[in-house]
Amino acid sequence: MGRLAQTDGLTDVQREILATVRTFVDKEVIPVATELEHRDEYPTEIVERLKEMGLFGLMIPQEYGGLGESLLTYALVVEELSRGWMSISGIINTHFIVAYLIRRHGTPEQKQYCLPRMAEGRIRGAFSMSEPHCGSDVAAIRTTAVRSGDEYVIHGRKMWLTNGASANLIALLARTGEDGGRPHANMTTFLIEKEPGFGETRPGLTVPGKIQKMGYKGVDTTELVLDGVRVPADRVLGGEPGKGFYQMMDGVEVGRVNVAARACGMALRAFELAIRYAQQRETFGEPLHRHQAIRFRLAEMATKVEAAHQMMVMAARRKDTGERGDLEAGMAKYLAAEYCKEVVEDAFRIHGGYGYSTEFEIERLYREAPMLLIGEGTSEIQKMIIGRRLLGEYRQPE
Image 1 (cartoon, rainbow, N blue to C red):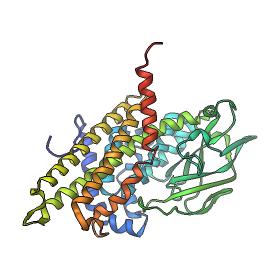
Image 2 (image 1 turned 180 degrees about the vertical axis):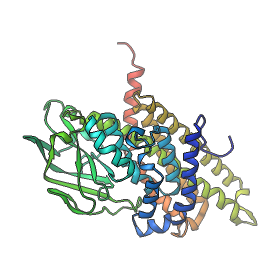
Image 3 (image 1 turned 45 degrees about the horizontal axis):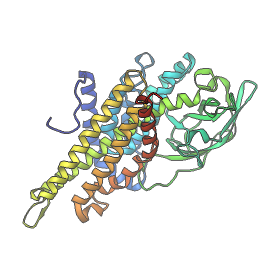
Image 4 (image 1 turned 90 degrees about the vertical axis):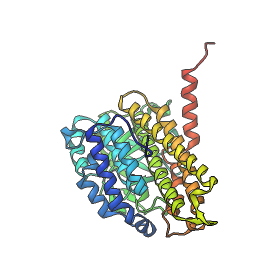
C-alpha cells in the first residue's frame, strides 16, 4: 500500500487534478493557514487561486463551463484541501452543494442562469436549512414563505450559514404549506440572491454578523434574518413548491460525504505531524518513535486514517451511481468524524506540551476537529439513520 489514503481506479485526469491540488496545498495553504486562522482572516488570496484553478466549477457540467467531474473527485479534492486547512474546504463545500442542487433539481432556466456563473466563481453559494431552535430536526423549521401573486414573502431566522456573508446566492428551505398534515411535504427550497457582506444585503434580508467560534475560523459562519423578503415564484428550485425537504436531503448526502472527506484530510495531516515529530523529538536518550507505546499509537492512528478514507471513497462512489446513498454517507460521516477526533487527540498527545502551544499546527487541528462531530448532522443522527436503514434491509417477516 505504501503511503496512506491512496485511491485505486482513478483516471489520469483525476490524478492530475489531485496532484495539482496537493502541490497547491503544500506550497500556498499550509505555510499561511495557522497565521490566518489565528487572525480569523478570510483567505482572499487562496480563494482567488481556487477560482483560477477552476475548483468552483469542479462538479458543474462542461456544458455550463465547469469541469464536469464526479463526486468522488470532489471528495478527494476536499480531502486534500482539508489536509491544509479545513476552512478552505468549507468555503467551497456549500458552494458545491448549491451547485449540485441546481444541477439535479433546477429548471433549465435556473441551470442556465446560475451554473455558468457558479463555475467561474462569480456566483458563490450558501446552504440554509438549520434554525436557532431546531438543529438537526429539519421538520421543526419555522421560516415561512407565503404566496403573494407572482412572489413569495419570506419571514424567519436561519442559523449556521457557512459563506453567509461572502455568498451572493442562498439555497434556503422554508415552509410553504402545500400539505399541512405532512411536515416534510410542505417545504420548498428557494434560490435567493443577495449582495455579499453584512447588514441588510437585499430588502428585508439581514446578515447580522459573524458567529465567533472555537475553531473553523477564517470562513464566515453567520445567522440570516428574513423580514418580508420578496422572492419571485420562478426562484423556487425546480419550479414546483413542496419538494424542498427531499431536495435538501439529497444535498445533505453530498454534504455528509464532504464532511467525511474533511475529516479524512484533517486526520491524515494530524498523522503526518505526529510521525514527523516522533522522529525529531528525543526523550530518555533516544528518538520518540523508538518507544513501543508511541509505535502502537502511530499504528492505531494510521489504521483509522486508512479505514476512514476507504469508507469515504465508497460513499462517494455510491452517490455517483445515482442510487440512494444515505446509509453509506451516514456511515462514512460518522466513522470519519469520530476517527478524526481520535487521531487528532493522539497526535496532540505525541506532541506533549508543545501540542498546547499556538506555535504548533496540531493546536489548530485540536480545536477544529470537534466541528466535524456536529456538522451535517451529529454522530447520534447518523446512528439513527444507519439503524433505521439497516432495520429496513433486514426486516423479519411478521
